[in-house]
Image (tube, rainbow, N blue to C red; front, side, top):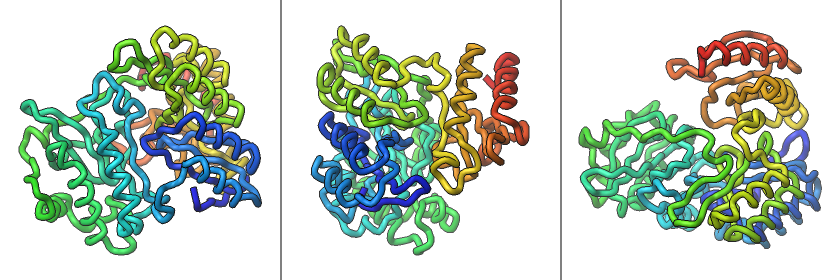
Length: 429
């Protein structure tokens, strides 16, 4: 938040939210800052955060407004390293094995309070999964932790440079040793990595995971569990699209209600309306999700349809049948100097084409190879090669990058026609 990043359309201010959560007054402050000091463009990110685009000369005024709303870190030197992803339904989910919020608060406190951790890369990231049914399992993290229950004991399984949706754990520790584990991994990384090795995957290219695990074991007061019951365990998959619409909570009579920000974009009016709805019918908080959507928790069940209608009226996509709700698109050539195509405009054309044919497909449009908008491999990727033209890829777990190349240099309309034909043949469903 304190380091405004330049872009073609002006500066970008990235607001990191603890556990993806923000209060209604804070959301109103973001909306007002975007309106007063920028072009009014607010983005929901794939890490459950917010960012304001198009900031001009009033950068200091914008930062002060956000700090005044309590949106910055307690220690200003720690702003870049507060990268901890939780489930949007943390502490509320009917499927959770544990409430991850207390542990998350301790981890964030350590990241802010320990000056040594401020040397971590701004991209070094941790994920903490408490067994929720509403959780992103496919975003790779430098350290991932996932709750499991073995023989009546709650454990935290963990792995390096991966994610629980695709990888088996290296080991596990009792939940009560979770903070000790995280701090030991961070210290080990900083002690071991060379200056150019800023991510865990870079360190693993030099030192095998098994060797790192041996070194980690010497730093812990508890024995690592590396038996086959742990290392053979895999996180159960979760159903898609649960962030859209009404999601149950463990507390009887309460639900969470969510909708997708179209192509990840909000404006001040939208965010203000959502914040007011959260204050009126929820608990006064909003949770941003890794699917670039907004979830209002602790809504009384009898108010759920009212809130859903309110989110839709504010401009969110509140039905999984809406094709645009499944589209991911980066900023594109309109606002990014590296972009080769207007991905957001083309995504709307593609969504309308699919919607007309009664289809909804998870499609990622990226204006260059960097793939800024998607932290995971999408089922379908359109990689821009020039204005309005894309190479088409289908996800394949055996293939690196975007997957298997299906066709080159397609217009967006031709890409839509191919996706419609593919859906009807069911070869990639």
